Image (cartoon, rainbow, N blue to C red; front, side, top):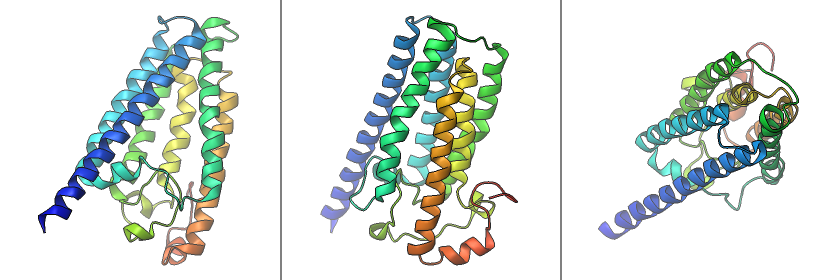
Length: 237
């Protein structure tokens, strides 16, 4: 009787370690790309961005572990039943994120193509805090908040209608859009908005594809969509 429970705890622990390793590695890669593209480690706004990013990830990690410890492990995996369009999404989205960071380094520091007031870094953080708060609210509300789009039959996937899901059907994506909108402001690069707009467009497309998938395949979602009518912006879409 105890053996399955112990094995389950060990599995959760291993998955948690894997997720932490992936997140820490991703932070280091972002930092490396930023400072390499800038050609210096003395780029203050990059340090502000990395510090802000680490803080919000730490807060999110502690909160999710407390509320849904098993979710941490699930977010570290791309499952075999992940939708094909979502795999394509990551193939495009992840490189584009690094393109944005490279352009920011080139623009703000190395070549100084444009100039952005330092005060706008505070505006970027002011956007990022409520944006990531929305993502975190969605994560702690929704035990099915995995990293990829799939119908989680192995986890008794059910529609979530509480918390931020009362207001829009995809509150996590709302947070993502505003969070990514603030990154060029934090880094001080007008040119970084070009790839940033591509990232935002990809999130909107993913929202539409995921919503269509849930409408077709998740029992109760169509009924939920008649109550919570909007995907991202109340009154608009």
